[in-house]
Image 1: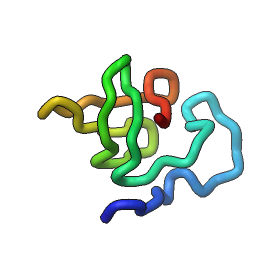
Image 2: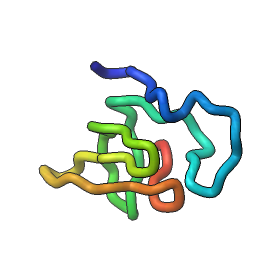
Image 3: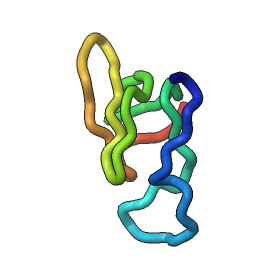
Image 4: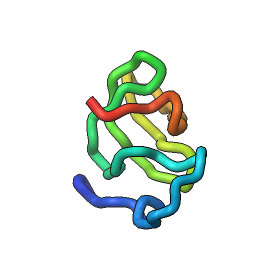
Length: 65
């Protein structure tokens, strides 16, 4: 479902493994210099589809566009 937020982003703590922005399915992101769309959200990884491939983004390699 596009626009669905992740339950993993609801906490208020500030750990190094947390994202500084809210992730949601269908969001356009840059992962390691490749533009794509979020397909799955996990506690640490963000699965991004780009160029018919899947990428696993992290809080340091994945940014909203």
